[in-house]
Length: 100
Image (cartoon, rainbow, N blue to C red; front, side, top):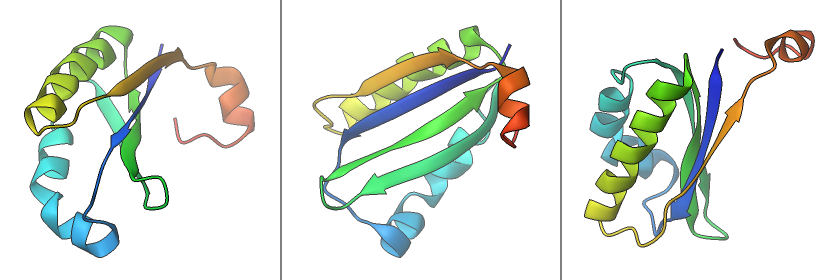
């Protein structure tokens, strides 16, 4: 069963195109994570937050990634990482055109 991971954390930038350039290597690394189906990168300049919405093939992959990514972000100096895991109801999600 697919698992959705929601992550957010305080972030002071860069934003937009500058973020895309600065974090391209990180995005390429994340794309290689075991069990990752896709990630949507999120950013909110008004609240100085960034993060992502991830879809993993299974809970074990999502949990392993969250633990690793939390440690990585804290190593970058991020003081607080919020992560939530959700099971995906694929039947209802398909009705609403989820990219599963």
